[in-house]
Length: 418
Image (tube, rainbow, N blue to C red):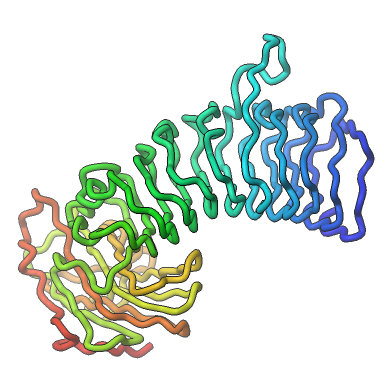
């Protein structure tokens, strides 16, 4: 019944033992969901996204096999029943764009040991998306029993002020999205195995005590992506950044975005341009005695754009043959001023790309060229750079041997042809 625009009403009570899936998404005139009579042991998926439903009945506790609940873009949705916590098999919850949902219900502790809910609260919850729901507090998360299960948490657009310390108890959380949480002031800590943090647009964020240690490679070494776009109150992000952070990443790729007008000063090869340009190149030489093991390459550009959505490309050429390329896309926030993008790629990852394209590495020495360019978007580069990342025990090449680039746009051309 997906997209049935004329559907306005369902039966007041339902009991369909064999029903496995309900899809009423985009039935924009549907305002009420029926009471559920007795256990429905087969229903696994329920999609009510884009409906006019305001609340769910407490009888959803009888959907004992439900693992996926979608209520995204239900503009009138205001209330979740406490009984949602009784759904032992629920894994995926989507509440994106539910603008009138400002809080989650308080957990009610059952007094009857034979209660249908058992004793655990959403123990299998794996993905929770509450983007744009305007939550003013997230204390309900601390009452859940999915500490070892929850992998993705999206709280973007919420109105809470501080991320609680107990967020660290979600030991297997890999992705945390806080995009546009404009009242968020402090991130005291992060889950121990987090891979991706997107705090872009957190314009009030001014306290992130662990950030210096993270950027210096002392903590949370599984990070692969961190977006701090428009986090202007986090002063001196670049000052804490060092290649120790990238060395700690070992064989993992990682990308970071933060406010700034030039690539980090510690980069081996840097180029600050006299004026913003559409394309930027920087060339460097890999010396004769170079060995690939445990090493990687960091790429960085400082850019500015007036648009919220856009993309640019970074490509590595060896002896003018493309051996690696990546596209950076953005679309969660408008960049209010210049920002720095930094990507670290281990050579083992580049080698996978080379083999996939049925190519081979030449023997050192050889010339490399990093190209940064955009196709159509009004985006301009102010600075670019490359940096060879070598662990302390990788003493076969001192950093000073990576040569190339120049200040103020001299030495190597800034325009490339495609």
